[in-house]
Length: 155
Image (cartoon, rainbow, N blue to C red; front, side):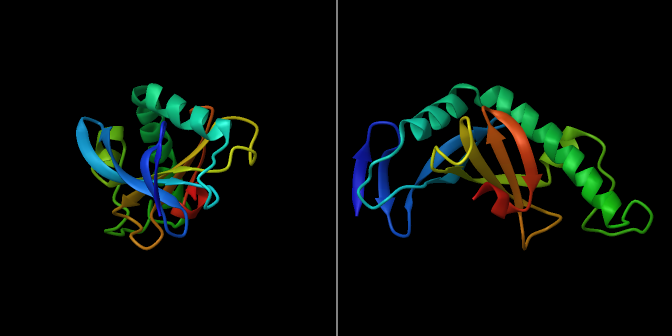
């Protein structure tokens, strides 16, 4: 089933609502999956609309935060796994956001139900070169990065 939504556009319901959108991620237009939590009736919470619109309005600033947070996460994960001492080709030494940017690609934006957290909640998923099985997930609350981890934290 498909429906036309004023905010999310033409979305389709399979196991949830979704569509493919184009996102400009650091000056590269990229197709990503937009996934919206919702019932089959196509009714969404006002908070979901606010979260999605606020993300789009603040996207340039959010991207910078994401990159810094991913770099910190990567460096911590590399250290936890001992790859700061022992060489591992999947976890090379990375010191700048430009280096980490080459290791990730945005994959999806998740708009969860609005009543889970107190604020505008969004999840963002990425593919990453160091963990192709689990990927990378970011959780935003009020357009600020609150969690970085495997993809499932964004879903």
